[in-house]
Image 1 (cartoon, rainbow, N blue to C red):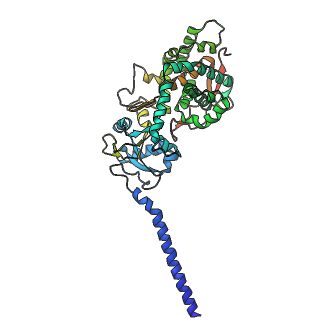
Image 2 (image 1 turned 30 degrees about the vertical axis):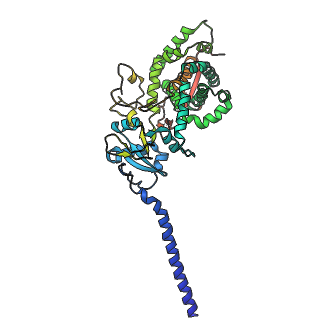
Image 3 (image 1 turned 90 degrees about the horizontal axis):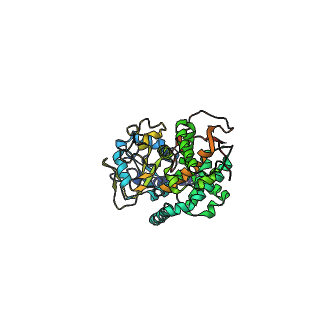
Length: 427
């Protein structure tokens, strides 16, 4: 009996030893992939304290706060962190911004696809996609193409205005769907643009990607809150309408159909200033690039580098909300962009609303048109005010924008707007 008990004890001891060895082995297997992540690549900024070797969930869920706090806590305002398997360098400051926006090795599409969570292997695709996209943008911004589709923009905007007349709507959703539809018009994909139900479904998923839709809706919200600028722009709109009117009872949509491309682009300078200022707010989120070049890219004059194959992110708020560049940057004030004040012009790459450096927005011209046409038609046809979901006028300030996704900021809370017809608007 004693022999049996002794044997069982020996087996138990060996089992415990085996389990302990297995546990150590599993621990080593789990830890081993983290070892190379303990230190940043050579010449890259140091890791943000508390995120060494580990992912940074705050970057995913609270991107703007993460980058702002990281800048404050890091050496020289530059730092590294991990996003999945991707090493990321967060840059800030004028010198770093200039290099970031002008270095040819930093690719915006490759960075966007990684940050957006694409399931594609983009290593061999980005150049092809970029070339095809540039061809589409080039076609869309040609005078003949824009003129060809101009009447569609008026017709589609008119249909949208009929749906919102005397109603309470979410301007972000409404303008998002319309801008998505107009984008297809300018690209010539009328089979999608003609199907409103299909536009609504796809637009609900993808329109948020289009910075234009957020900026168009937020511009309306600011105008609803600012009677001075609303009056300036409405005067320009009414003057343009009267200039093209043939009879006193002519429908507005018929008048707008006679506007030339030049009329749309040059008749509304105050609206242009307002759009510019709105973009300073909506486009204060995160820009991403990937170093697809063959060498490390310097981070300005900081002494740090963005390693090959690393991502680099920049918060546009570093420029757009900088009190050294803009007077009272948290105040919506389109006059800061007029010729008399011309704020920001003395600072390199101070305005990134339409891109800058090596990455200007190739679709800027038709994106502007997609904002101007529906905005002008809304101002001509309606009085509009911010309200609650029940249609009660509210004097509360607009909610803050959140910059926790790719692209333009989104309102932290849902907003509503009430439209009241001010002129005959039939077709």
